Image 1 (cartoon, helix red, strand yellow):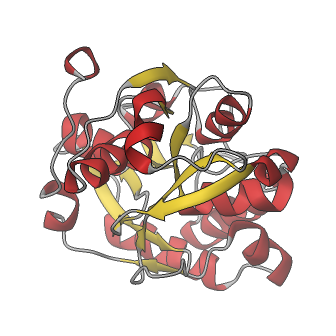
Image 2 (tube, helix red, strand yellow):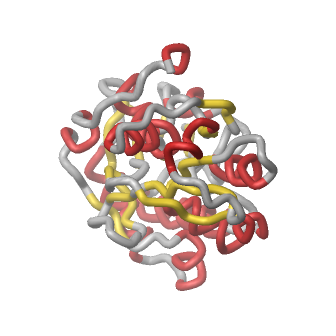
Length: 245
């Protein structure tokens, strides 16, 4: 069985993610001994023996819906977000005081299938009458920040929890400034395979989150599990395909 927690797994959070999975496994009564960290995102998400992983709204809407079950969304208690929701932070270099329309002409995204790094950026800018020009794909929020700091782009959209972790752990944050925040959308949902006992897994995950040690809760900013209506994920608009952007 495949178990991965890839969304916010970095050196500073690895022990907390390990503890979270051990809490789930103890309550569930089965599952692999350790998280799978040597598996690709899509390989894990689409694995027929997927037990638990964490994905993003856009991959769920585009490809995963109908193949996996939604377990719930994490509640990170982010500013301005209801339980189980998150948003994204638009960042630019601290010494670049240009306005959003100029910054958007050299935008960096993390991945074209990212809600928080591409979808949220596209529709936030659209609400301001701006169409961004995408000049690079970083491969991950933690790499978008240095790309902007180093001048490979002028604007990036980073999900609020990733930005919190970057500010907490990465010196590059001091070289960046917050421009704006996007509207909240459902946070990166936990998913499982179609054949899993959803109620048992959901109860085990909820209990594991409640049982986290204070230092692990602090490392992950993880407070609770929110079970949202599926429509909250599916009714969001999709950004254009990258070749059309």
